Amino acid sequence: MLKRKHHESEELELTTLLNILVVLVSFLLLSAVFSRITIQELNMPPQAGGPAEPRKDIPLVIEVMVRQDGLEIGNGKEITDRLPKLNDKYDTAALSQKLKLLKDLNPGKRDVILLLEPDIGYAAMIGVMDALKFVEIRGPREGSQRLRITLFPNVTVGDAP
Image (cartoon, rainbow, N blue to C red; front, side, top):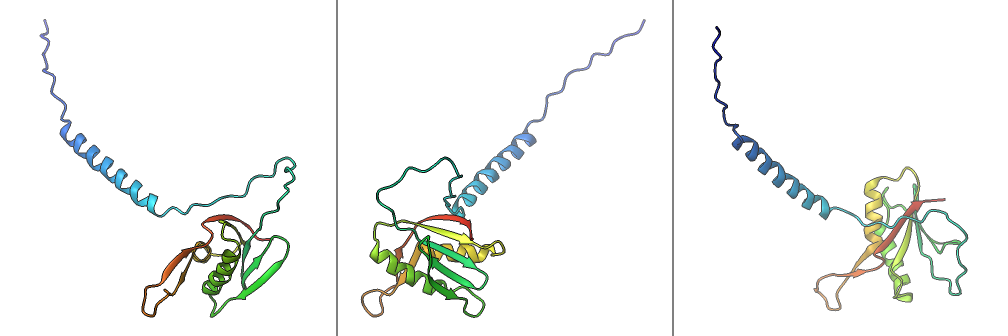
């Protein structure tokens, strides 16, 4: 007759697995925090739906178009200003100054529409978005720090016509 061999069950070694899980969880938490810092908030234009309700008061529309040859500022119906490129770069300082004038005339306005041509680079888009959101001006006294004024923090992105 054959004798059966009795094997004792061995305990599973879970220490290594737990070490890996601790490192993995901490890495995922840290990467989630850093990715949250670099997020740009955008408002996308609404999809075409049914007919819009007629409004009694027509709000001011500010459109900034980024083209290959420069920037254009419009009111939704026509182009009001053109800013050509300087040394192959967009003139974001002049854009901020023009938008500051519009903000001074319309202090309650918080939104702007950014329209881009198809071949505009990401860095150019972010630079123009920063110019739409903030402007830096000199302080009231000589030697004082530059003041950062909020212009239009709500940016809607779309395709240029």
